[in-house]
Image 1 (cartoon, rainbow over the protein chains, first blue to last red):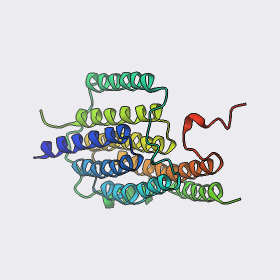
Image 2 (tube, rainbow over the protein chains, first blue to last red):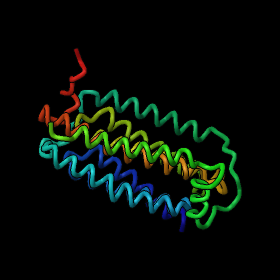
Image 3 (tube, each protein chain N blue to C red):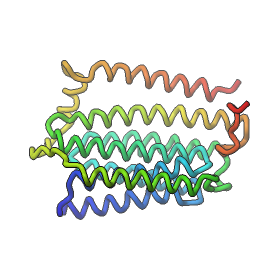
Amino acid sequence: MFDIVFWILAAVTIGAALAVVILRDVFRAALCLVLFFLTIAGIYITLYADFLAVVQILIYVGAVSILIIVGIMLTHDVWRGNPSGELRIPALVVSLLLLGTLVYTVISTQWSMSGEPPQGKTVEAIGEKLFGGGGFLLPVEITAVLLLAAVLGAIVLIREK
Amino acid sequence: MSVGLEHYLILSAILFSIGLYGVLAKSNAVVILMCIEIMLNAVNIALVAFSRYVVPLLLTGQIFAIFVIVVAAAEAAVGIAIIIAIYRNRQSVDVDKFDLMKW
């Protein structure tokens, strides 16, 4: 059962990612990107990462995809399509080489698995890690500053002169 | 053979390569941003798979994935803002025509 779910999700994910790259219409590519984000949330669920699946749907499906669709709407190039640049063949060669290297490395490496069962609920454990002592409190604070800087930067960049 | 760590890592590698191809080959700046999001999501799958299969009780990979998501959201906001600012000046989002930093 679990394996079947993984294979279906993997097939849909790869198909959606390919559609983003191949489709001529930019708006349809953005809709395929939304499908891609949703299936990634499903893959997180198969990995027992419930909190991350919810975060994925909230931030990617809810916020980032809306931002990208608004960006497409504001730049009127939807009808000009989604052509490939001059570097199509070299890009294909480079990405296939990278894929071959990565797959070879993954298959030939002896991974040190831990046989322990996964945690049932991860929300409490992640909160403990992020805000508890000896955890990731300083990175969380720095992330807050980064988000503030990004929002201010976006406003300054997009303001009418 | 049941699904294990290798399957997730190979899925992640395939998605990363698709995203890399899009970033290198496409000429529409918004599509390039979308392909960067694909690459970041592929890396997140690898991180969460490591967290699930190698250190299931520490959850370090999931915490890393949360930080990646935060940085990706900030990057999308700033990236769209830059693209719209350039579009106002140039009436185009074609990266082959962006030569603002060439002299």
